[in-house]
Image (cartoon, rainbow, N blue to C red; front, top):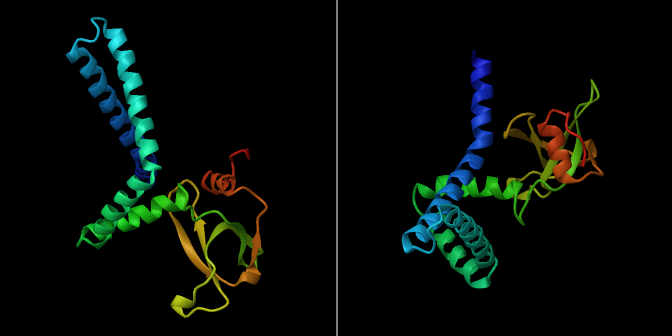
Length: 189
């Protein structure tokens, strides 16, 4: 029963962002199609639905364009700085932002796949991703930080290891991540 519950929770963690995105898009669609119906743009519900879909796609596209602009980035950086210094909120917002940036966007952290010798006696290697090569801030020398993701999970563990136990993988980082997270059953693109 405990194992079933663990799988169920992992499934929720995987699909919650997808569900939230879907709900937001459906609500936007409802707003735009309702707007066209309210204005009386058309007496045909199918045409209003089509216009609502076009309006939703256009709205998301405009948001994407704005998000790429200098002015929006500056305003967002100002707002984000205030969130990161707000009591209590900073303890939620900053880790979620860092975790999200590690997987997507321009600041992806899991972009250096490596093969790590984790058990020399049994000659066991694990696939991981170098996250920090300079650990002097922690007074650690001659070591690097490697994140080892777990299969079928969004979690993993961080290990500090000597570079001599690391071999860079000649593989695309996203393919390596898919391979690990799928438990080694995914096909390489």
